[in-house]
Amino acid sequence: MELAILNLNSAEENASFYSKLLLRVMLKKLGYDNWREVEIYKGENGKPFIKGDLNFNISHCEKVVLCAVDFNNNIGVDIEKIKEIPKDIFEFVFHQNELKIYKDITKEQFYKLWTLKEAYSKYTSKGLSENFATIDTTIFNFQKNVIQWIQDEFVYSIYADNINNLNIKKYSENEIKKYYD
Image: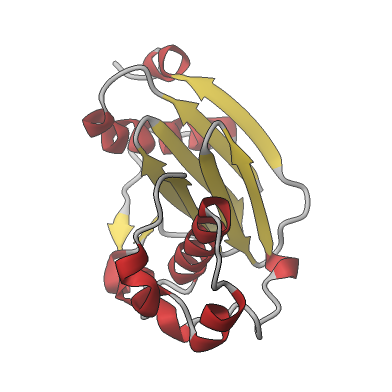
Protein backbone atom coordinates (compact mmCIF):
# COMPACT_ATOMS: atom_id res chain seq x y z
CA MET A 1 0.00 0.00 0.00
CA GLU A 2 1.28 3.43 -0.95
CA LEU A 3 0.46 6.25 1.43
CA ALA A 4 1.23 9.93 0.82
CA ILE A 5 1.05 12.82 3.23
CA LEU A 6 1.08 16.32 1.79
CA ASN A 7 1.66 19.41 3.91
CA LEU A 8 0.35 22.56 2.24
CA ASN A 9 1.61 26.10 2.73
CA SER A 10 -1.45 27.65 1.14
CA ALA A 11 -5.03 28.03 2.25
CA GLU A 12 -7.22 25.08 3.17
CA GLU A 13 -9.54 25.72 0.24
CA ASN A 14 -6.75 24.42 -2.03
CA ALA A 15 -6.69 21.06 -0.23
CA SER A 16 -9.30 19.53 -2.55
CA PHE A 17 -7.33 20.53 -5.65
CA TYR A 18 -4.05 19.29 -4.19
CA SER A 19 -5.61 16.00 -3.07
CA LYS A 20 -6.55 15.21 -6.68
CA LEU A 21 -3.11 16.26 -7.88
CA LEU A 22 -1.45 14.13 -5.18
CA LEU A 23 -3.46 11.10 -6.31
CA ARG A 24 -2.28 11.62 -9.88
CA VAL A 25 1.35 11.95 -8.74
CA MET A 26 0.96 8.64 -6.90
CA LEU A 27 -0.53 7.05 -10.03
CA LYS A 28 2.48 8.24 -12.04
CA LYS A 29 4.84 6.67 -9.51
CA LEU A 30 2.85 3.40 -9.75
CA GLY A 31 3.48 3.35 -13.51
CA TYR A 32 0.20 4.65 -14.90
CA ASP A 33 1.12 5.93 -18.35
CA ASN A 34 -2.02 8.05 -18.61
CA TRP A 35 -1.87 9.39 -15.05
CA ARG A 36 -2.89 12.89 -16.15
CA GLU A 37 -6.07 11.65 -17.87
CA VAL A 38 -7.27 9.13 -15.28
CA GLU A 39 -10.97 9.67 -14.67
CA ILE A 40 -12.30 9.60 -11.15
CA TYR A 41 -15.85 8.35 -10.83
CA LYS A 42 -18.29 8.48 -7.93
CA GLY A 43 -19.88 5.30 -6.66
CA GLU A 44 -22.77 4.69 -4.35
CA ASN A 45 -22.79 7.21 -1.49
CA GLY A 46 -20.26 9.32 -3.41
CA LYS A 47 -17.12 7.22 -2.80
CA PRO A 48 -14.64 8.08 -5.54
CA PHE A 49 -13.08 5.28 -7.58
CA ILE A 50 -10.99 4.59 -10.66
CA LYS A 51 -12.09 1.82 -13.01
CA GLY A 52 -9.91 -1.25 -12.64
CA ASP A 53 -8.37 -2.87 -9.62
CA LEU A 54 -6.67 0.15 -8.08
CA ASN A 55 -8.28 1.37 -4.88
CA PHE A 56 -7.66 4.75 -3.30
CA ASN A 57 -9.00 6.99 -0.62
CA ILE A 58 -8.26 10.60 0.31
CA SER A 59 -8.85 12.77 3.34
CA HIS A 60 -7.81 16.32 4.07
CA CYS A 61 -8.00 18.53 7.11
CA GLU A 62 -6.79 22.09 7.22
CA LYS A 63 -3.46 22.06 5.38
CA VAL A 64 -2.75 18.31 5.45
CA VAL A 65 -3.78 15.79 2.78
CA LEU A 66 -3.67 12.02 3.29
CA CYS A 67 -3.93 9.73 0.26
CA ALA A 68 -3.66 5.92 0.11
CA VAL A 69 -3.59 3.73 -3.02
CA ASP A 70 -3.33 -0.03 -3.42
CA PHE A 71 -4.15 -2.73 -5.94
CA ASN A 72 -6.92 -5.15 -4.93
CA ASN A 73 -7.01 -3.81 -1.36
CA ASN A 74 -10.00 -1.76 -0.25
CA ILE A 75 -8.99 1.33 1.75
CA GLY A 76 -10.55 4.01 3.93
CA VAL A 77 -8.54 6.89 5.43
CA ASP A 78 -9.25 9.85 7.64
CA ILE A 79 -7.32 12.68 9.23
CA GLU A 80 -8.52 15.14 11.84
CA LYS A 81 -6.88 17.87 13.87
CA ILE A 82 -7.03 17.35 17.62
CA LYS A 83 -9.11 20.14 19.14
CA GLU A 84 -11.80 20.50 21.77
CA ILE A 85 -14.22 17.60 21.95
CA PRO A 86 -17.69 18.41 20.60
CA LYS A 87 -19.53 16.70 23.49
CA ASP A 88 -22.98 17.43 22.05
CA ILE A 89 -22.44 14.78 19.35
CA PHE A 90 -21.42 11.86 21.60
CA GLU A 91 -24.74 10.03 21.30
CA PHE A 92 -24.62 10.37 17.51
CA VAL A 93 -21.00 9.17 17.21
CA PHE A 94 -20.50 6.52 19.88
CA HIS A 95 -22.10 3.14 20.31
CA GLN A 96 -23.64 2.48 23.75
CA ASN A 97 -20.75 0.12 24.62
CA GLU A 98 -18.23 2.84 23.77
CA LEU A 99 -20.09 5.41 25.86
CA LYS A 100 -19.68 3.14 28.89
CA ILE A 101 -15.94 2.79 28.33
CA TYR A 102 -15.11 6.38 27.36
CA LYS A 103 -16.84 8.39 30.07
CA ASP A 104 -13.73 10.52 30.63
CA ILE A 105 -12.40 10.44 27.10
CA THR A 106 -9.35 12.51 26.18
CA LYS A 107 -9.18 14.62 23.03
CA GLU A 108 -6.71 12.15 21.54
CA GLN A 109 -8.98 9.16 22.27
CA PHE A 110 -11.99 10.97 20.84
CA TYR A 111 -10.27 11.79 17.55
CA LYS A 112 -8.72 8.32 17.30
CA LEU A 113 -12.22 6.82 17.59
CA TRP A 114 -13.74 9.41 15.26
CA THR A 115 -11.11 8.90 12.55
CA LEU A 116 -11.32 5.13 12.94
CA LYS A 117 -15.08 5.23 12.39
CA GLU A 118 -14.77 7.58 9.45
CA ALA A 119 -11.97 5.54 7.83
CA TYR A 120 -14.06 2.39 8.34
CA SER A 121 -17.18 4.01 6.88
CA LYS A 122 -15.17 5.15 3.84
CA TYR A 123 -13.78 1.62 3.55
CA THR A 124 -17.35 0.23 3.46
CA SER A 125 -18.28 2.92 0.89
CA LYS A 126 -20.98 4.30 3.20
CA GLY A 127 -19.05 7.41 4.20
CA LEU A 128 -20.82 9.93 6.35
CA SER A 129 -24.16 8.35 5.45
CA GLU A 130 -23.25 5.58 7.91
CA ASN A 131 -24.62 5.94 11.42
CA PHE A 132 -21.40 6.02 13.47
CA ALA A 133 -23.31 5.03 16.61
CA THR A 134 -23.95 1.60 15.04
CA ILE A 135 -20.21 0.94 14.67
CA ASP A 136 -19.10 -0.70 17.89
CA THR A 137 -15.30 -0.71 18.02
CA THR A 138 -15.40 -2.67 21.29
CA ILE A 139 -16.82 -5.76 19.52
CA PHE A 140 -15.35 -5.77 16.02
CA ASN A 141 -11.77 -6.81 15.60
CA PHE A 142 -10.58 -3.55 14.10
CA GLN A 143 -6.97 -3.92 15.23
CA LYS A 144 -5.82 -6.21 12.41
CA ASN A 145 -7.15 -3.81 9.79
CA VAL A 146 -6.13 -0.47 11.32
CA ILE A 147 -3.11 1.76 11.47
CA GLN A 148 -3.36 4.94 13.54
CA TRP A 149 -0.89 7.53 14.69
CA ILE A 150 -0.75 11.07 16.01
CA GLN A 151 1.64 13.58 14.50
CA ASP A 152 1.75 17.37 14.76
CA GLU A 153 -1.67 17.54 16.48
CA PHE A 154 -3.35 15.43 13.77
CA VAL A 155 -4.75 11.91 14.10
CA TYR A 156 -4.25 9.68 11.06
CA SER A 157 -6.33 6.52 10.57
CA ILE A 158 -6.19 3.89 7.85
CA TYR A 159 -8.61 0.97 7.58
CA ALA A 160 -7.79 -1.60 4.88
CA ASP A 161 -8.10 -5.26 3.98
CA ASN A 162 -4.35 -5.63 4.32
CA ILE A 163 -2.14 -3.11 6.09
CA ASN A 164 1.15 -4.89 5.55
CA ASN A 165 3.90 -3.36 3.44
CA LEU A 166 2.86 0.23 4.05
CA ASN A 167 5.09 2.65 2.17
CA ILE A 168 4.73 6.25 3.41
CA LYS A 169 5.98 9.21 1.37
CA LYS A 170 5.77 12.81 2.56
CA TYR A 171 5.44 15.63 0.05
CA SER A 172 5.61 19.37 0.22
CA GLU A 173 3.35 21.65 -1.77
CA ASN A 174 6.32 22.68 -3.93
CA GLU A 175 7.12 19.05 -4.82
CA ILE A 176 3.54 18.46 -5.96
CA LYS A 177 3.30 21.75 -7.89
CA LYS A 178 6.01 20.64 -10.34
CA TYR A 179 3.59 17.97 -11.66
CA TYR A 180 0.93 20.53 -12.48
CA ASP A 181 1.09 22.32 -15.80
